[in-house]
Amino acid sequence: MFGSLSNSGDYSDQYLGTEVGNQSWLKFRDNPFYMTGKGKFWLDSDALHFRIYISSMPMAIPYHQIRSVSLGKTHAGHSLSEESILKVFWKKGGVELSSGFILCQSKTQIVETINLISKHAAI
Image (cartoon, rainbow, N blue to C red):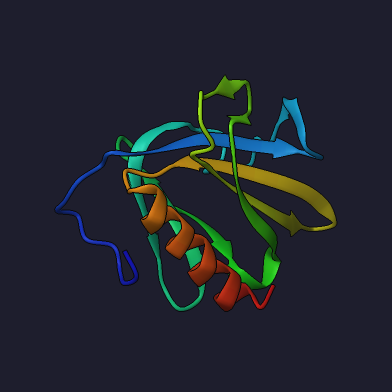
């Protein structure tokens, strides 16, 4: 997970979208954040990344923009029966944003991912 993008591998993670101002009905439409779907999630030394399977352009959320990270049951109109949505709260150009991801990991691994993001983001 921590490392650079590889074109080989599994695209079983999912990006649910980015909300503006924590409003599930208000979506962030900047490129490449407007697309949702299955893809690959990874971290490197500068940012959290996600690449939608059908896209050649990965999205990146730099650690210095991240304000908090948590697990939730709902995001951008999607609901799950348990807390397994990785929610990343961040700020870009003065706008409060929240991005949601479903990772193909165990709950323990997701908590480790949250801790790693928090460490890099110094939160």
